[in-house]
Image 1 (cartoon, rainbow, N blue to C red):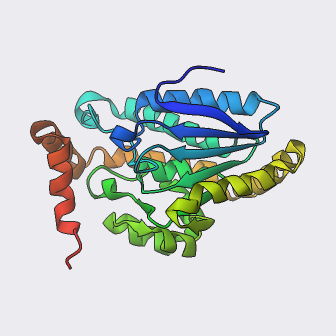
Image 2 (image 1 turned 120 degrees about the vertical axis):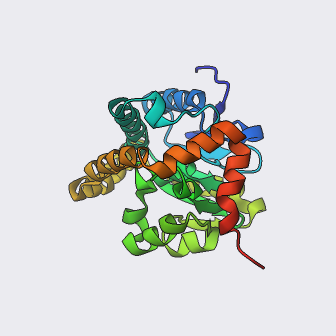
Length: 273
């Protein structure tokens, strides 16, 4: 088994394996290194005949605050439109690969699950969340759309998707449950135990049947055109990166620092008491 720096990949028991995003000091922001190690874990999990179910969680206070924006450059000033598009389509390929892993994946979500984090869990088979979990795409206020739309139009329909994308507001775990973004919600102290208990039940079913159950459901979404829809969204995100809004925000983040730019961006959206 490979050695990793930004994730922990381990056998929990029997046929149950677990991936922990391990950048707690950065709220498990999805750096290029972490995403590369995710690719390797997906290879290991797929090829391991002793693995039947994979639990994915985050270390520390959150599942993931989204993509790591440190060092991000203005796409219009550093990259050509073509290179930007190619990069976004590589992102799409990664999340679709997660979606198409032959065996089940369960996201175990607590705390923040934002932007790229919602893309991550949107492509897992199941999502169990703690009561403190929060979902959203605040980056949509200044940086563009999510290339995959996090599967939200499929999972909760176009109207609710637009409601949250239009404002970048956070969604509570309970509302995410109501709108089918997550399967179950538990008190934080029970989340890990309940997720593991369900994984044990999954692991009792022969892997060859789990693979076919998953393939049948995913094939249905393939017929609806989910892959093409995500590729189209990535192309629209390329357009978003060329808008004056995104260019100005990237300039501000370089000049004033990322933290300051994020604070300024989100201040008008803060809910008044």
